Length: 158
Image 1 (cartoon, rainbow, N blue to C red):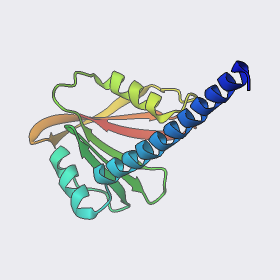
Image 2: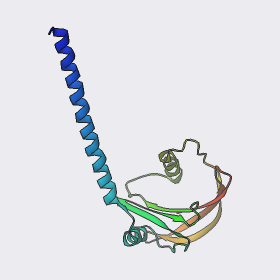
Image 3: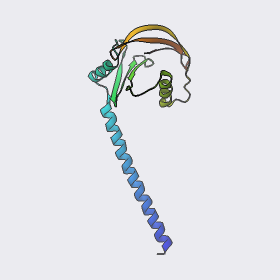
Image 4: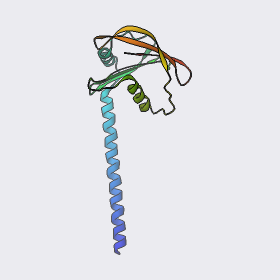
């Protein structure tokens, strides 16, 4: 066998071994990610109540039930879906070292959703109500607007 053949076989062997190593690393990474998500995401009632109560004091409307929550690295998140599957309640709390305003937070959430066609519509404040977030009294702003599907929505921020 000449040198060209040996070089070709050597390069092919290195390429195959590299692909196998990458495949094994991918499987390990995928399984590790699944394990971490399984530990962080909670769907049991007790964990959801614990995390949501640490964010805000509120009464959940009776037609919201399908829920999950997460708490990691100072971040807390709870999500509820209404019986109509179109209504959602999201509560989240960022650690104090995160300096972000509401518009930046909304923009980043839209980018993370992967919906490039989502257009932020203007909404206007229609009410102000007293509330309690993390044990502190706050004024909650209730806004109304029309979403990208032409449907009226309400959002509360505080």
